[in-house]
Amino acid sequence: MRILILSASTGNGHISAARAIEAVCRERGIHGRYVDALKYAPKAFQMWYGGGYEMVVRRAPSSWGHLYKVSDEPNISYKVQTQMDFGFLFKLRKLLVEERPDWVVCTHSLPQPRLAELRKEFGFRMAIVVTDLYPHLMWLRGEPDHFFVPSAWSKQILEERHAGAGNMTTITGIPIHPVFAKSFSRQEIERSTGCKPGARIITITSGGIGGGPFASALKALLALDRDIHLEVICGRNEARRRDIERRALKMPFNSKVVVKVRGHISQEEMALRMHASEFLISKPGGLTTSECLAVGCPMLVFHPFLIPGQEEGNAEFLVKEGAGAEASTVDELVQVARDLLDHPERLAAMRAKARSFGLPNAAQDIVSTLLELGTSQEKVNSAVLKP
Image (cartoon, rainbow, N blue to C red):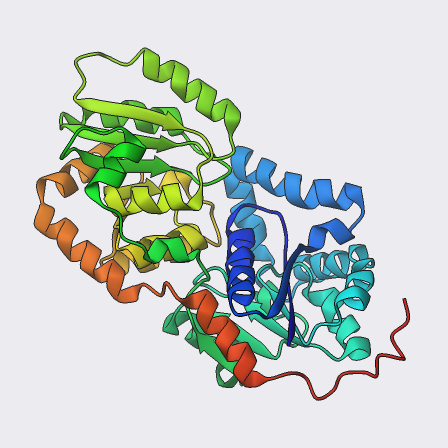
């Protein structure tokens, strides 16, 4: 079987999910290749689609949330975006000629409109990996053959939005790197973080983009008045990392909070920190949420970090199911963090809840399901497929 995995370089989550599926294919000796679909679009569209997304999320998150919600209905906004996605990925046919896949798996909705046309010629089947708990209308484009979703709630919403979708949907969770199922010793944790023996660790991040009022949150956490080792992860935002490092040098020496500032770190390093932390202060991106659940790490959702739209449902799920807490202001952030630290029994219950929803083997289950479903019986004779 030949599997082509398509995503789009807009944030880290979609790509990480695609890479996890690719890694499983490699382990099993299956031809599975990940490709960034944006590379088959004109440069101007790449810059607008990828760079524009990050710029809007950083500078005007409420505007992004509005666009997300507006395009969740079959209106003019949805139709215009679908036409653009179809029109600008005209070079994608070249990739299909090279790969001749049995299955095309999408961890981002961008390629779906163009794939709907190409499948008539190439005969491949299309699977969609929904990387947020709530399945936005963009995921339903192109009449996919199979859906992989994070939860039973996601499957229910999908069935409500698309009659019959439940019969071709598998609940697997969101694909994450296998390292998030690993355990780490205290020695490994202390060596990697540089923390003191027995120190209580909290990790704070706002994702790979590194948006939100990071400095304000960090300053507020110094008021915890608890012996804490705070791991500050700034992601790909180098300007943010340099700014936070400068601010860290000016922090009061009498603070009980030890601060370590880091930029982009590997998935293994992030898994170790989730494993070691009392809780993670973060935005509930789809992948981050799944990683926390797999590790059993409670998440304290800080709403100013959150990307409106796709992450709101994730936050609601974590809080409602008891696997996380939330804070809307820096003062509330300190209050909730202090309360969690002072009630270890509550943290223990949250860890247990998180693990009960964790699905660390999503990538393996997706590949297994594709193998069970088999190759397409409608493949066009290769002689017809000319470059």
